[in-house]
Length: 194
Length: 285
Image (cartoon, rainbow over all chains, first blue to last red; front, top):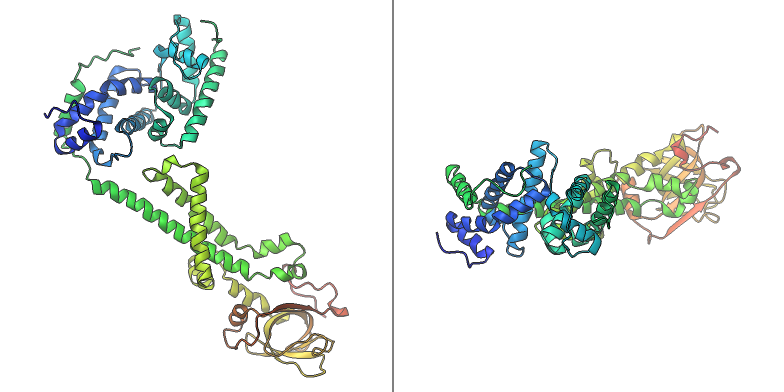
């Protein structure tokens, strides 16, 4: 395999089209990030995540020629990851579960402090409350929350990943925060409790 | 619930993916495949705009030749007139083809970035501009008749004009004035069927109505017991060459400068006679 570690994603894509072994570089670069992202989207079981990730990378490989350099590779691969994960849920007729329970402290930070993810110490009961609130949040709101606050994506990147206008992303983020705050109150977790 | 730690070793994913690629003989789809997909989207979008534009041209044609200037005489209200005049089939066709334009624009590689309003406006403007272009180049009638022949439930405007106004037994007649004898209280008209009709007006048609031979008129009246003679109540004069030619199967020459005018002459017998009134037959005399 050619040493591709210092190359940009776009260059590795070009190289992978000539030599499939170079594709391993992209897999190594994105495996952990996408594993975390897929988990946050609600695929809790590690074996399931492995299957989803494998499908994602195979789809990415099949569609390498569709990658347009005007888009960042990262946004492009996240888009495929998002679509494949949603497709996986549909095929399994499964609902997202257990996502972000371990990110509960960041969630609390974002609700309280706007867009900075401030770490707060949480009890086990707090995590359960937050997890429950998140599971009750509509998918479209979870999608933007995950990307904005946990994957730390810009609005433009989120627009590219979820294939929607930037204005729509901003609206969804605003509403998602609002809905989450209300849900947290409903499940018994009142802000300021921690 | 297993959340963080996968049981799969570091690098295991790349090995399994590459092994899968080799085992199943997976290759990247060629670039032309994606270019073709994009091209098909744009082509379908273009076709939808084209069909939508045809609908716009047909719509404009029908609206242009609706009898706007006499609607108060022909219909009870503007709303009722619009119900008759609005070319719903073209309007529906236009909207139907606007929807795929919107979706196709959104499905292009960068289409998702644009707001709903912007995409709708672009679709509307592109379809509208092309439609106005078709109409301006005089394609309205062709579209209304020839293209309209392929559109279900569509009855071309000029065919409706003929059907509506060639009903002398119902008191509706259109045709070219052949003769307006001096000092007479009536005139002779040649209908679309080529037959001569006598229209009795009970007023001096020369001095009071200023009717002239060669004019295309619509007459609303009451049939008499003598075939071929109508008691004229209302005369609509609209020297639109296209209506004249369409109604008379293009037999007659144009002779007027296209001035629009309406002459309404009501006699005692014609009281309460309205031209359209749901196209019900007029009462017997």
